Amino acid sequence: MSGYVRRGQFDRSCDMDLRFSASQEQFRQELRRWLEQHPPPELPPELPLAEEVRLLRQWQHTLWEGGWVGVHWPREYGGRGASLAEHYILQEELARARSPELVGRIGVNLVGPTLIAHGTEEQKRRYLLPILTAEEIWCQLFSEPGAGSDLASLRCRAEPAEGGYWVTGEKVWTSYAQFARWGVMLARTAAGKRKTDGITFLIVDMQSSGIEVRPLRQLTGSEEFNQVHFDRVWVPREQLVGEEGQGWHIAQTTLSHERGTSPRQLVIHRILLHEMLRTARGERDGGPPLSAHPLLRQEMAQAWIEVELFKLLNWRVLTRLQRGEKLGAEASVVKLFWSEMSQRMHETALHLLGPRSILLGDPRGFAHGRWARSYLYYRAATIFAGTSEIQRNILAQRVLGLPREPR
Ligand SMILES: Cc1cc2nc3c(=O)[nH]c(=O)nc-3n(C[C@H](O)[C@H](O)[C@H](O)COP(=O)(O)OP(=O)(O)OC[C@H]3O[C@@H](n4cnc5c(N)ncnc54)[C@H](O)[C@@H]3O)c2cc1C
Image (cartoon, rainbow, N blue to C red; front, side):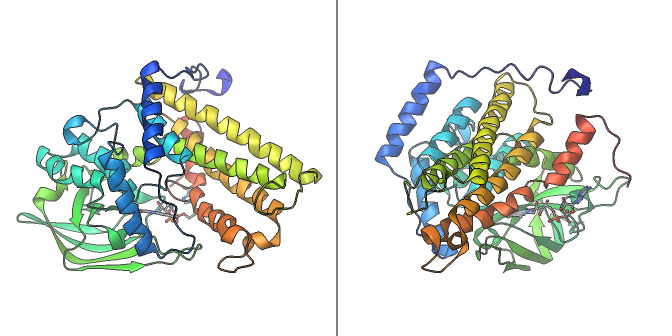
């Protein structure tokens, strides 16, 4: 293996410490007991998005009251000061209990850690607690119609003025913008030598005048993400994060928190695999016992192997983080692997379940269209948080030492 490794990123990574300490196991047991007493809500299949968001805010609030939101945040900002291993255990247990994802996940997972690292004390005191309690939902205003993978090409302008900035431009694919009270935005305050120069990181009040949010319909039929138009929107200087023009550097903190480990995806895909196998054995959903089909047997064995590999990838990343080492290209391997694994597994499930499995919103649909909806949802997994092509570019350059693509 070392013949392929130019920068020493993977050569020491095969040794993993797979044990959790006694206190970490105690944390797991405490959480498991709490989840038994406070079972997560089960959302009906065709629930309107606004109603789903309302129920999920309640659920996040309940979790917060139990002390289970932002556990790895510092105590002074409402966290528990827990270790990364405990944060990982939390994700595992929530997924195991089939808890829906946090409705405030952009705030908890991306904005909070960015403000903790780069925000002023006033910003931390103002914004962090309502993120945990779900009183205030956040959105991420990074992508634009001409700037997704090539984010540094962004054109949204923040014109410096006395006491703040006038923001004008267009953002797109902004998840939950229609429910958000605040957004973190990248906007250009000056032109620079490099595309990454002159980008500034701002907190935007989504109730400001001059903002128009237009929901976009996704494959699943839901309208989670939006196009957001800014027409001379005023952003006071107190909402600048870090230094003006240093936004690219700050955004790296946000983006690195978007990749990294995926314990939640590990548990979700273990559950999906388990359900698929039970169906194949004719044990649930009235599914046909098709496990004797030679091609399906191959696909299902492959799905099991991939989930096991994904577990090892997660453990390797966790071990590295626990040792206080920085994550390198591992984050890209994890993101790439789980997103493509998920799509293969969903295809196997639909092969297994047959034509009824693709019916959505139709009483003849298999399991109320649950598999079809999940299949469509996970088509986005190879796009958000960096597409598969971009992850492979990162690996080609940083691990294999191949030259950068020509610009
Ligand atoms: C469900 C979902 C939710 C999202 N939520 C948010 C959000 O809340 N906030 C936000 O800011 N953004 C969000 N995004 C946007 C997401 O970050 C972008 O879609 C993603 O970065 C890709 O950008 P793009 O869509 O502009 O595609 P493009 O960058 O235009 O890419 C188009 C295709 O070209 C390929 N490509 C591009 N450049 C290269 C290259 N150099 N080499 C090889 N291939 C290349 C890509 O892989 C892709 O297949 C969301 C996206 C999805 C799907």
